[in-house]
Amino acid sequence: MTTQTTNTSNSAFLGDYVEALFGGLVPDSDGVSVQLTHSLQTATCQLQTWQIQIGRPCWLRWTLWLERSLNHDLTENFPCLLSPDACWPHCINDEARQQVRASGVTLAYFNRLEIAHDGPDRQRSGPIFEHWPHARWGAISAWAWAVQRSVDALLQIGCKPGQLGLIGHSRSGKAALLAAATHPGIALTVAHNSGTAGAASFKVQGAGAESLNALQRAFPHWLGSQACLPEVQQRIEAIDNGVLLKAIFPRQVCIMQALDDAWSNPLGARLAFDQLQAYFAAHGKGRNVHWRERTGGHAMTPQAWQQAARLVVQLSGD
Image (cartoon, rainbow, N blue to C red; front, side):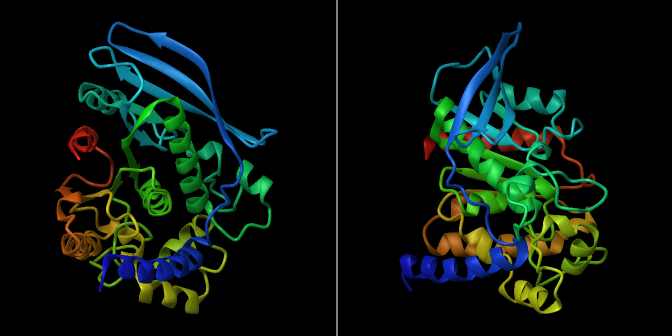
């Protein structure tokens, strides 16, 4: 089977998987524009805030922050690592930012909750759902769309094509994989403890791992409106997440997994990685799949940020 035939077959299953699990994709027909709203230089780095605007007239906007070390080139064609997790200060903290900047990589981040909320009422809410009130897709699809539009904005700002990495933690890791599978501008995708509906296969679950049904009951607003139906869940599990991961081919993928984070299903993540690595290797791109494991629980560590930034730097040699 040729690579083209394999990709065509995978695309057919990918559409079914994305529709069943996430409720499909958010339309991307509206234009993206950016505006620099503030710039500040400190003793160690340059900070910028940009406003991303969607549509003409604009119906949605959010802030994108950029940080660059003064020790590295501040011109266009800069390598970049993007995160949608600005809503979690314990995720993008001082140590994380320092690790990325020290690697010579620009850190870009935004608050995904400015696009779709993640409230305790477990309802679909936020500006994007106000714009499309009858949407079938859930928050993960909305966050993935915001990642993609942020990628479009970064390429306008001056990020080097082919050296743009994306990192997502937990629920954002799920969104990161969906974004990368359906947007060619993301050269590297790092999913950190993304679990069910992310990097973990449905085919094996360790003790304490989150099932699809448990995910849907706890966070119904994350998934598509039909993901609560038993027959839909059976179809999702039968297709499995390999179609999502394979859609990133031939670009780079890194699965980061804490082995003691039982809820995110380390066994399922490892199975998905092994299958993905075999797929990439069979098509001559085995070195584009990376596995990083540790212990220490669910939260991101400075080491994870450092590893992700180093992978972005390595893209320059590809």
